[in-house]
Amino acid sequence: SSNLIFRVSCSHSVRFISNPPWAKDNPDRSCATNPDSLFVLYIPLDSNDHGLYKQHKAVLSNARYMHRVTAVNALGRRIQKEKNMNAEPINTHSNFEPAIRIVCSWVRRSGQFGDTYPVTIGDIGTHQIVCPFPIISAEWTISTTNIVAGFSPTSQAGSVIPVTAAMLTSQEIAFAFTTPGEYVVTAIIVSEFGTQFTSNTFVVTGPSVTSINSVTASILIYNDANGNPWMGFGRPGSPGIEIGADVVGDSIDDGQLCFIQLAQNYRECMDTSGWTYDLSTNGQWILDVGLTGDFIYQNTVVAISTGQTKWIYATDAPGTQLPNPATSSYLAFLVGEGPANLESYQTFLMFRPNTGNSVWVPIARLEWGWTAMAQLLNGVWVLSETYGPENPVGESLNTFPQWSTNTAARTEWNRRIAQTI
Image (cartoon, rainbow, N blue to C red):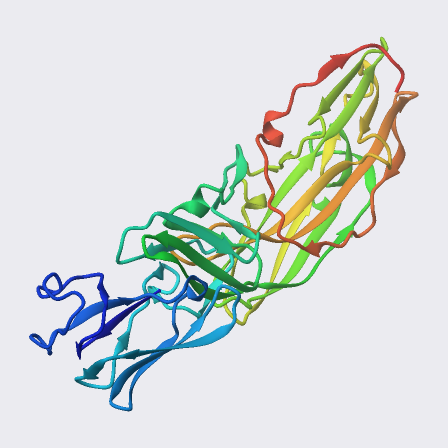
């Protein structure tokens, strides 16, 4: 179907969407009584031709008024339709206006069929169907599943807000792309005049991760500044792992980089009576708040501008404090459950554009971990069974970190049945 604006004197049968004063009296006859009026015609074509017409031309042919349109049908084929009208045109030019259009906050103007716009990952845009007549139903199709309606991280919880089926059948939808690429957003509506659709194409940009690497150190037993013994992957001032990433600002918008780190902890100890105790996340990934208590790891945020290359860096030295060996009622401490089941960490590299409504989105992740046992032998803590992957390398990805608690909330050891570690 097509909405066309004509300034013509006509004698053919038409259907009016917005009726001029004379339409009621002469809906199917000449409008010569008011030849200079501007009015809107609804000219139906057959059902396979629904779609928005890219262009149309009015030409004179054998003293008859011919309307020619180039359209895209439901199968994506370009077709032409010609309709002879027993009318003498006042002029040979007519303005085309699509029946529906998408108004998108990303482009700050009405989108037209086939338009292409740039946008950045993490930028939440609102898309609204604008239609001059009542809509019976609406549906959105988006040519990628890599979209979110939001992401809400705090130190207590972090969760993705998905794009739901209900959102995809409303007249307005808001979401952000999470991976670069070229994607099409299509609005399909059903009205009393049939089915119509319009689309916008978005070229989605985002920063490129050139590398995300790490350097690991040794697992050791050491004394802190107060003389307390620890078993650790590294130690304060000499971390067990150093993580760094090179990032190129390939997005059209400036933005920020940060790390978010999740942990899957397992620690166990045994006392002199044979009772064991564990401090575990039970296989659940939780937020590692480190020493800062924030969801942004170590409170480090790095600004990145379009065209820049930036380096972002973080360290960690996880460990567990051991009792004074001279008075200890514990015989052994275990971190992880051996090489096959490490105490594990996921360090996510995140990006957020500096736009009005944006969210953090993941662009890379590095996985690492460690396991070790400390045993009290002859009044001395002795290290054994240590393992940790050497210098693990990360990869680009778009999986979001999600959590419902943090490491600061997991401090209570659970007593279990007596057994030997």
